[in-house]
Image (tube, rainbow, N blue to C red; front, side, top):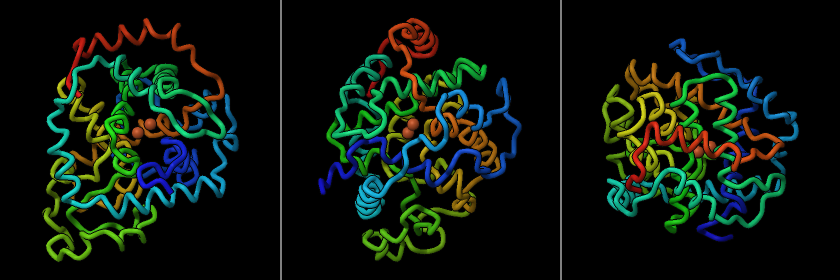
Length: 307
Ligand SMILES: [Fe+2]
Ligand SMILES: [Fe+2]
């Protein structure tokens, strides 16, 4: 196994989510009615993808093994110290200046070993998510959020191992929930032997708010920090917490959340089906769509921003 790249394809992790959270499964209750243009229903997203549910990658044994290897590494290495060290290394973003479209093209240079059923480029995946949101008549900032939500994966191109870029995120600095996928692998995590981190709330206090928690390091937090000055708050929630399945799907960290956090989670849950189920059988025509998206990007972002 390659310690840095246990997954043949960086998106194998997202594919594995389909098995865990099949489309149509009820999510945790949303406490707000979203001021989106139309109610979001994953069935609609799925239908729009022109692809029957069974055709989403059959999460077969070989892929399952690499996902296990991936989580074994992720749960071993994502410690409080590791996360704090990555935050120091990358935040505030100061490594290079790039425009949004430029970052999309940069991410597109990420080469994967193999992808058994979809040879879509990273740009095509991003455009598909955005197009599914656009098709349902949602606001422009929401479409833009779909377009950029995974750009943090450029961390891979900065040399980060897959387990520090993708995967479900979860708080460090407090006990690991058994609701986290493959939670048995936390037995290898050094934080387990730090009694300071193993009290019921660890280094946090009840109701302290999600913003106070250090989540495991990955593409969500990184991109949030890159774009936080430019997008409306719901967009930032979607970006920052879209991989926090133990929180928004399993509700395993309610004890730290405020009423406001619960309300804002409504946006994350509304976004989730577009992220998970919008991968269609047809390639989007990126060149034809590009002018629309360049225009949308320039409406919210400066020509260049720091990564
Ligand atoms: Fe993502
Ligand atoms: Fe995604």
